[in-house]
Length: 336
Image (cartoon, rainbow, N blue to C red; front, side, top):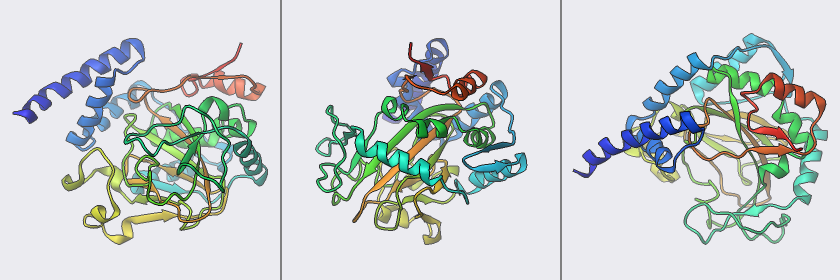
């Protein structure tokens, strides 16, 4: 009886939440919860159907672009997109410029962050900001606020990069929205806070369809938090693990063959594109530290809460990019 009630209630809550979103551009908490429930129930089919509609209504055009990923032709961009469709990820041959890395590292070493509170069951960050101290950690994860990182010119150059936008357009098959920016330090902390720090396998489900770009700002080896991914898992989950929550390596080893567990190590500057609808995690650190920057493009803003950002300093080129790509950069505005 309980399941029957859910089968009736959650589709209604989702439909009502979607209706409210179309009117207000805001997602209700119940609408978002129902959306996540239906993703699990339908094994992602509800996302796929809605994304097919968005591809028609918000159609995007894949174009050649020159930027942080190199001078890419339309054919090369479509090849990258096809590999992500097949595997769920793509590791680029190019890396970030050293000057860019140094500027971001200096910023991250001098700017206050909020840390994960490991004593709370759900993900919760401190109210106070602290300067990251690698030698005296009090949490496994220290995350910067979007409004802070967007004041950095090196970060802005990545946010408005045309090659990232073109790959996102090709993969999402629509005019994309840049909806999430994140940067955080990770440190060894035993096994405490592994769930809150996203160091257990899970899937992301904040939007209907999305693509993340990860940038390693520090060298990443097997012991300091490489991104881990189960190849092809973005296409659907076996019924035995079709649930919304964290999963252990041992649990997943019973489902997937060893060769599908991918671990991405790399020098600082390494760039990955990942569909984190697939199962993934940051491997818990046992030594050293890791600094990672992330950009996410999505096909809609329905879902998790999003943050609008005012930019106090922005170049004329970036202003022009925002004006030419209003849907993509709709969450950004210039401070008055």
